[in-house]
Length: 475
Image (tube, rainbow, N blue to C red):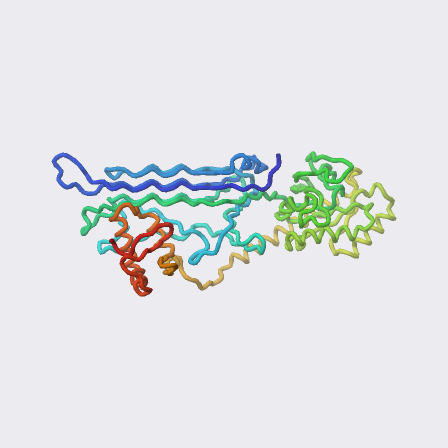
């Protein structure tokens, strides 16, 4: 079963909790803290597999969950890191996530592990964060109907990998908090939650040439003649129900050709089958329009297909294209010439007359397609090089964005937001008064407490950070 779009829920592993523990040995009085750190949660990793050609398996397994990290233990024992979940997807899969605007950043702030022995807070109590900018620069796209979306990965090469959901860091054990002024810390961090969200997987076939045209225009016949592909062929519309791929050899080079189900007028709005498969034309370098020479209005047919392509994506009508009149063995040369003239009045693209079943004109079309594909790829490489040129951009640094915070009062509750402070709150064990007091101290060091007091907060005022609520001062 061919499936080219699927919705999945991904959940990276949660980090393991740190522990509070003190060294206990015979003849050793007041042993120091030895609570170990929690292990990191596993990532969800997508890998492009050339042996897959459908997303059907995700219909039966829509939830993808990586292994959580293990908790730390006494004697500075580090918790077990969670295993990454490796997910195989077809080459050409695009991984998309719906996003919502964020006050401080477009994507979640990830954290970078500290090496054993690093101290999250300095001797004078200043917090030391481990946040770092994300290694990947996801593309943000906006659609009036679908809203903002984030392309997490576009897997176009066999074996290409992408971490689509990152596991949470493990919490620090109390051994990490010892210093010259804190010799018996009773604070340990909770493990950080891993990324969790829904993804849309879209399979877009990778082909050099995309065949478009009305149903029964001869697309499948053309593909079966110039390649070794065996699509279903019959003398009625909508014979092709799923995309087909074939490789055509011409003059020592090869062309990968994609045949998609026939389009009808209104396909971009959901009529017929075409709108479900137009995504497979998006990656093609050149478009081959196939038009039945027996049509009463070849120019009108050509323009209707162009209109549907433009409605789906304006970029598609900007692609290099070649037009071919098909089934010319069924008419005489005079009709072929007349229909060619009608097309020439509607387009400046090259026009060929072919008969796939009679093997007339197919070689010439393949040569023209080969030249057009080569020219399109060279142009694409040139544009890519130009886009990689350094362009100065003035913006806040990742450190500035991480340090930013905001305080708002709503119905008597003071809501504090910001990547850094929310990260500390998520790792705080609110059942441990020492951990809560550490968070209060961090808020004081960052200037948040001063702003709370300026906005009228008192000692018993409720502070909300993330999903947690607590009073401004210990009661």
